[in-house]
Length: 488
Image (cartoon, rainbow, N blue to C red; front, side, top):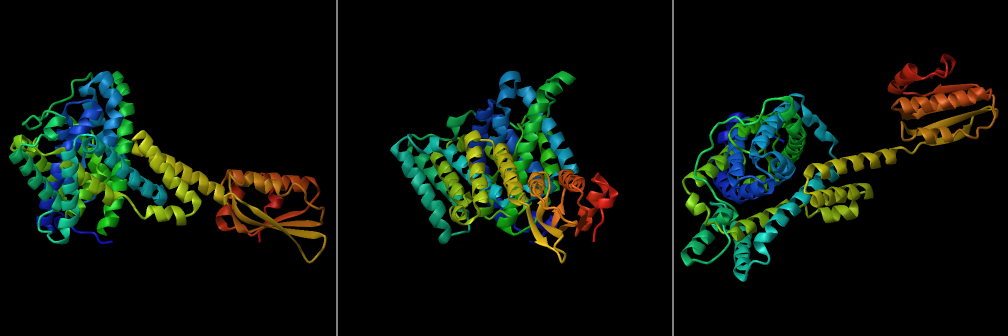
């Protein structure tokens, strides 16, 4: 992977970034309004958030071309706080969310991304594609016949046009042409204006009207903590996916800090907390966006659309935007995962399916990813917890060597002890750990129990073959007596 300079990240793909940013801005409007409705706040709260976060993250983020704005995953975590305490407490929670994310970024939280297995990443991507598609269903099915026609035309334009013409992104052409047709013909069709009222005003700075005391902190902290974790999880996973898609690298810790800065500022300008959006980031990259300018353009053009072209924006047909998002779903979904299910180890296939099921069922990305990571860890621990103890006679028939194969830790310690339940009396016993590693206190405790048992039977026991790390752990923690701690 290559890493571009900061200047190249801004100006290395000017035309492509501007055009892609325009397409993304148009797709952001219905999403931001819909997520505001989910959270139970005015549509402008989501729109201001999308404008603010996209513009700020373009400067301070660590992943060029990634789109951050108001998201459904974050909106779902806000519902109870808004219902019980109102908008001002949500804005205070948004600011605290940013502070927590900034702290996580300073602590280099991104290094824990290495603990997310590939199976969970595949499940994350597929579940997001499914959730994005589910969100489009109300705008496509059960409306009227003309809706299906417009969705079909949109899909055809977005799928076929790039094969012959790439100067202007196909989604932008679909939006302009089909919106023009609807406005000219007067076809009655659900549009962006159907989702909520758009105020043609810029956001302004204000401090949330909440008491600055410990009680307020108690109210907003649980929500802020949940939002900060969900936001970073979605942002860092999306950044990793874009790294692969664009074959470029990114600074995940800078991204975490950037998300924090963006949410702090957004909270002071009347916006809800947000994070990276894999759907819009996918639109951006597929439309030719590669740099920070695309993210900036998306946020700036979004506000331009609202302030200057608000009367036209509300006329954009929802079936057209839904059709574009369906193509995003098709492009986002990892179709190779069906083959993956058949060829991957069963444990990995189960982890991937669990991640998808939990995310789709709860509509919460963090729960799905956590469930996948935990199950993956448990299955891995079960897999490596098999300890094989093999007996072999030595030169003298009165001595026996027991060779231990595997990893000795909390999950395998009981099996190790059980292997020595029936040991024949002999002049000497050798425990050979050349093919084993002792990992924790439970492993050392198991050695203690075996040594004490054998020595109580009058056996002479010698331990050999411990590697350096195992030897250090045994010397530090074992209690069976210094006489038994000889190694060769």
